[in-house]
Image (cartoon, rainbow, N blue to C red; front, side):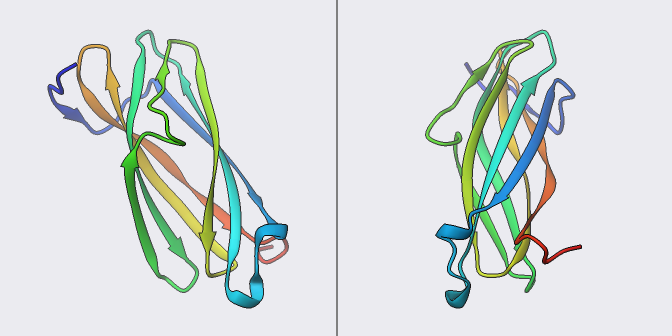
Length: 131
């Protein structure tokens, strides 16, 4: 499919995020904090969409920022049919106990149009660090 143009948003894509601190994989003495995040991408619309690329902005509590770009997610470029969801789990490694992630997916609709599906900002935090 050819990419005709890029839109900023599309209300047909709903994104929910759950996070979990991975204590056994973390090494606080070495400034290594590992977090898993599970993302559910739900297509509420009447067309199918394909996730093409991802863009993440990861901000740590020391204000350092890392940007991550890449094709698909977890090695896939899923096609999400109307009324269906795609869910995956990935991980982030921070050097601080707290950070945030936000970003967007470039999605391709069945008419060849690309739009950005915003990923709402979420917090990665070691338990009991933030009250």
